[in-house]
Image (cartoon, rainbow, N blue to C red; front, side, top):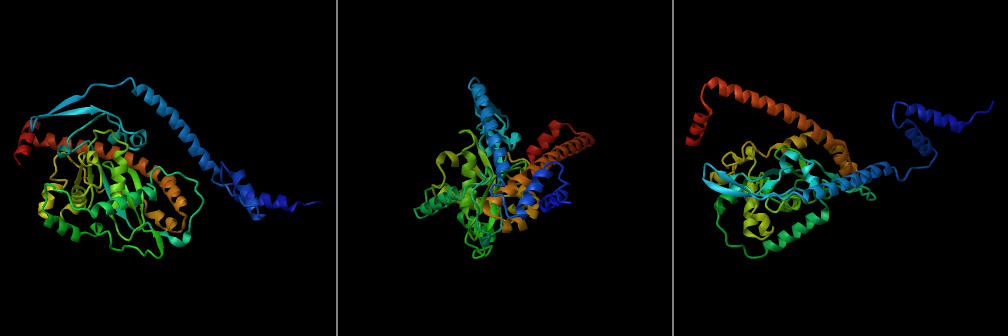
Amino acid sequence: MAVSVDLLSFYCALFERSCDAINALASALKTHYSRRGFEVTDSRWYDILQVEIEQQVDAVLQRSRDCVESHQSPPPLTVINEESSTSTVLHFGRCAPLIAQRCPACFGGTLYGRPVDQGGDIHVATDGNFHHHHRRSAGDCPHFYEPTYFLSKQSVDAVGRRIDAQCKRPPKLRTCLVPDEAIDQCENAYEAADGKKQKAAMDSFDDTGIMALICRHDIPLFFANIDSPGEQQKYSVALIEHLFTLLPPQATVVTLYDVGCVLARSLSKFEILPLDIVSCLRFATTAMHAYGHEWACQLVHNPRMCIGLSLSDGEGTEQLWSQFVHLIGVERSSSVPTAIGLEMKVDLGDWIRHLLLFLHRGIKAQSSAALDIIDRCETSVEDLQAQWADQ
């Protein structure tokens, strides 16, 4: 009787991988050849193929959208604010498909131009997390993934060099909404405002954290790797600048940040961002951090005192970090492209799907509870609005 040892080895590998209902044979072949010394050097070919197909499909869909939009050019719409008796001209425009697909509720609209002092068109929040380290000893690997969520190191560093160059020039003349003394106190009270404070060992880690930008529905828009000891302004500025490249020229944005008052002062003192962006941008502090700021700062930057911010609190990044906590250990020993690929491929899809389901249920529950309260108080909506205006 003749027995093939190679066949028995392959049968053993097939038994080990038999629980994989889809790729059992392919996984068994890979295991079998790896044990014989034949390593697969391009194991990510399937992921790359999927990405290539997605890009080609998106390109075809985008050409169709462009063809349809070329025949749609409605005139500007004039909106009258009943409280202030002022009129605002809203302009037709569309956000880039990349960002419109991430949150259609925020970026799927077609009319833009609401003044920032009335809440603006779009609300976003940004925050940094220094638990997502990457060990320097893990090294790097060949480029195989083009991230759509993460900003490149080159673009972030370019913003940093621009900030350094502008800060060496004399500050511009400006009208201060908040006294510099108050903002200095806010800056000293928060670590996020100290870009030089070391929050991770730079000799052990080449990336010390992640900076995130999310919309008002807590959906992640973009990320940037933090490769400095502290949370420098270049990361938030780079994220905001990249966001504006995907918005119509008339779109206005309110950004909530732990130290939004400090960043707002920097942008008003120095020409860090173009004037067309600064004129469409407003900063506010996050709701939970606002009460640690000076009172003069709260009067301008507290979201609960800003007209038009509604329930936007800027605290959704904390939920995002909570969802990403299980990736901390994996990212520290992965190569940089692998860490980015894992985070975007494995976690963000489920995070966004669960978040949308949670928002749908939560909004319905809150709406029903609010209507019940209004019905029980037996007071007309007009009387309630009048009392609210008198406060």
